[in-house]
Length: 158
Image (tube, rainbow, N blue to C red; front, side):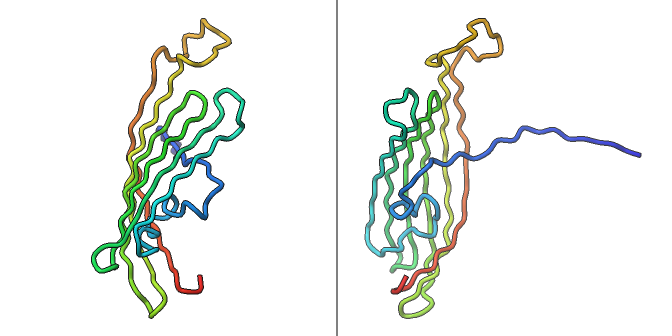
């Protein structure tokens, strides 16, 4: 009998928590880029648990428009998400290919590229055990790429 094992570092994705999905579809689906067929911009600010130190704060600004005779859509977005001692900034670029299926219906296929810069500054943390040698003594900063794909169908009724 052979027993083997494998260990690896795994890190999960972190998306900003939002309650305004209807006004921020580009953050979730890159195929939404250019869906309004005009230049569209939006900005959202969320401050959860106001009055509590380190409470989550999120700022999102995005814009998208069509090009190439309305067969392509291009979108850009920036997100600043701060929770406690962790500050994450994300820059998104989305591209959508828009395929007209009927006089009123459009199916879009989208790709997204994202750069995420996350910084954890433990100098600001209130540490209970000051002598703990396992706590980092400097700020931790990481830059990671992220990619996404989406589909979006719309017509004059929905």
